[in-house]
Length: 114
Length: 115
Image (cartoon, rainbow over all chains, first blue to last red; front, side, top):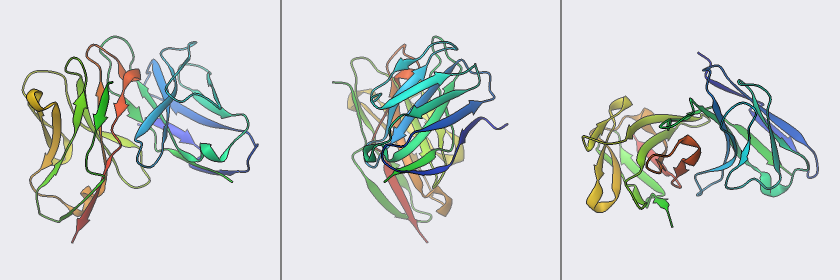
């Protein structure tokens, strides 16, 4: 089982450039999430999609957009990258619904904005 | 305010020694509690979780955690650490009756294992 797959694994951007981080899950999960991980701050939720066709802001959504392309795929877009967006980005998924609390994580994308 | 605290940023232990990683939470009602491990260059893997019932929870890789309501704590333990346990460990909570979108993570504890 591949689980949650993220691409790319590493990326360097110049300030002002745009890019899309891709995420796909093969567990037939309803809910998907994007987190960023910064030193000493744990993981913070950027956006989530409770089910196909819906997206909602998390704790730190500014500077990002998302698309739930279908049930499997949930992408994160940086329209104009800033150095403050240098971070490790994790995609996760969960079955969804009441009582569904466990999340499954991808291996992360390490993004550097120079 | 609701919060999750991991007081130890970095812990170093010798291989074969016992380990305890601390986690404290501040929530109105007892939340759902989790420990995740992140090995270098990897995503997060769930070690164990507590929803209700027995306050001592067994997880994968020989880890266990004890829920203490009186101390609002959910500490992770392992009797004998292996070199492969070197990683970052995250405590996380979901509010009672909540869902995964409400996962809140502590700031993490980095574990170094000496040979």
